[in-house]
Length: 378
Image (cartoon, rainbow, N blue to C red; front, side, top):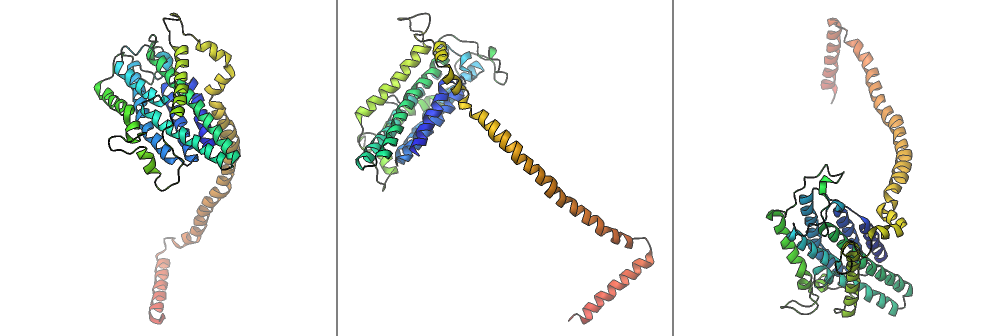
């Protein structure tokens, strides 16, 4: 279960690295974070999984509202036609930044505490298996831990890639330049109305401190340390330990490295190079073109599903069988009912010939039969 969760986290994160639709980036991110939760469940740390589910609900809702806000202004969800929105949409930018920092796991934002809780449990689980002599299981768990750290880097990178492309640089035209924006609205560059920004401000405020408040690493204002996780796992043997500063520092450095790489690729840094980013995204895409195509095509799962499952199995085999079943079973059954009704009706039709004498005879016979059963039936 842990290995599947770790692979899911990496699998979805890689697709988020190359997505241009801001909602797709967030959707892939959601799948990746669900992988984190499954990783925790596989180690028996369902308290940490639910903790991350709880914090994730706030900052991911914030990010989706932020994507809706920029769509309201630009008329498109394609980040390639956004850019330069930081100055015209300061509230959306700040709240989106808070959500991105929380998703990336930067302290002290809520995502840091819940993601660190998962990493700590996986690390402890691998160590416990090793001490018990389960070397293969310990190795697999260690691999999942390493994959989780790689996913931390990817998460920070694709989230701030989206933020820099959307809010930094110059505006790139919005839906006026997007050939696929006919289903969206017009361009009107301005901050979203209060009915949209107020929920974002509330969610951003919660995303800053909620992870620390509900599951503090030490006793805080009468709240016991690790209150949420320990209550969720009440009565269950857990490998949970106190806050591990070393692990927290390592995961934070990895996340910050992802942010710095995104900045070097998608920000123009005046001190170093005023004309272009340090690293050209186009050159990176060209160097890693096979991987870029693989991630953009979503590992060809859509094509595999369409060609192998839908076309080969469903259309050619299942649909062919259903066609035979419909013609030879269903149609025969339905037609036999009509044939039976028609053939039964032929002799009955002979009785209804319009001759009153025949009607009177049949009626009299019927009365005699009924009378016979009434008199002699008992």
